[in-house]
Amino acid sequence: MSGILEKTELTFQQLGASSEAEVDRLFAEIEEFLESEQIGDRETFRVLWASDKKGVLTKIRNNWLRAAPPSTRRWIGPRLEKLTHSVAFKLKTYVERQVEGEGSGERVDLSLPGVIRSVGSHHLIRQVFQEIEGIFFSIGFSVVEGPEIETPYYNFEALNIPEFHPVRDDMDTFYLDLPKDAKTPLLLRTHTSPMQIRTMEKQKPPVRVIVPGKVYRRDNPDATHSFAFHQIEGLAVDTDITFCDFTGTIEYFVKQFFGPSVKTRFRPSYFPFTEPSVEFDVSCPFCGGTGTSAGGGTCSKCKGAAWIELFGAGMVDPAVYGFVNYDAKKVSGFAFGIGIDRLAMLKYGIDDIQVFFQNDVRFLRQFP
Figure 1 (cartoon, rainbow, N blue to C red):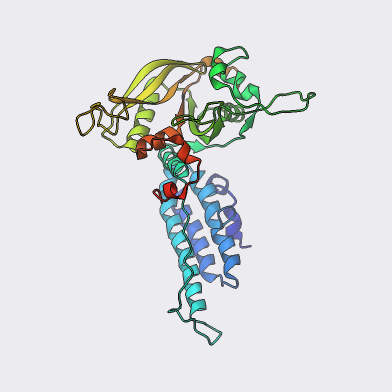
Figure 2 (figure 1 turned 45 degrees about the vertical axis):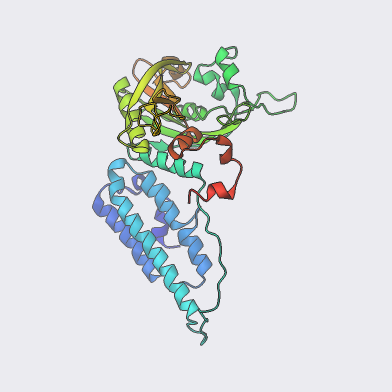
């Protein structure tokens, strides 16, 4: 493999590229190698350059773009887009030559009826995940993911929820049936917060991460509840983070997601792992925060309240820092937990959370 392709396995920090000129040089080397490569087998070429897991474009996106500091991403993005078009053009040119029968003396009759294949797309939940991740990427957050099977320590204790804390009653979940001699019980996580603890154990401040994923609770399924649903939890910890930083970050996200016209407000609340804790509300996007529908009746979405509760958040409780060996006198931070299914329902006017899990093509086709 070319030396330049091996460089896509490394991050820009590891490559020592810190200027726009160095970014230009690396992409120029990639383009030069692409231009010189002959396509012997189309599938081999596609796997090398465009496969979802180990393709060159995927490696550049993960190792160069996403892992780069925010100040460097503005140089990388346009060049990656240009490279993506170059790869697609080379594949398209190869296909056209094959259709024309280049080298075989034969031509394909393009007037013959073709095979119509349905084109897939991302599930609506995945689309919302990607939109939210893009918003937080733009302000310096990174994405971390973790296991759906957790220990009680990471799911509860390290988040300041001891064994007999009453909050556990609201987070009852599914425990795995393990052998009697198993030393540690295991459960399906009730939130993605355990990865906040795991991240802080491995990384000293500053920390700015979001944690997307599926979570589980023993809820009876109905129009607004499911035993499996999706969350994005966020965490920011540094030496000088204040409540103002927290409110500014959350308001920026909400206005990017729902639009600049929505209004926001905080209400005092309680969560074991944040202090102070708040519930975050947004003005109803369906009635414009008036509480009345277009016909003059009560808005069915906000029930006339003009506000809709979005998610809980707050400043990280100093007790949590004790579990990860952070000095609570020197650092501060905020955390939040966003229900993705709820946001998708609000943004797209969906009344029943169950449709996200039923795989009904008639529903899925509405969100190509």
